[in-house]
Image (cartoon, rainbow, N blue to C red; front, side):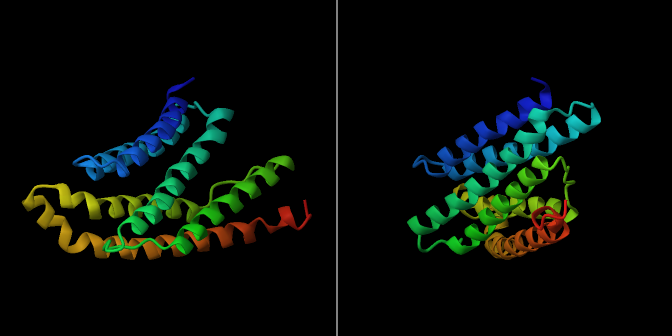
Length: 198
């Protein structure tokens, strides 16, 4: 297994560790969850960069890299719905319908890619899809920081606390909008696949 694929596999493990830390009762658990998720986000960038720059693209990577991304982001958003339920006074509330939009989009695009593969068609990544992924990761990090900064020293807490909740709220709505728009655009541009024109 080459290095990019090892990084992809590590993202599954980091997602598990992130979820464990997020719901653990010990001190600084949110900060630890933030560290795990940031490491996972870095592997998301590195595995693709290394695979392309070193010509290490494999069938395993083509399959598992997007799957690892979807599990990482969808798991985080589902976890936020649970944490919102456990803490009704949370400054930023992640509504279940928002997560349904995000997860449904990922399932639809995965289904479309499987359909394309069955017809020997390769679907290239869309620019909107890349923007969507960046917005999702940024949103998740911001949502974690909202809670994690409460664990930090006063000076650091005062630096983030006044604005990070507002930023996270804006990013949440932007992410839902981009996720929905990118899904609609992707389905429309590749409509020939499910309209039996191929």
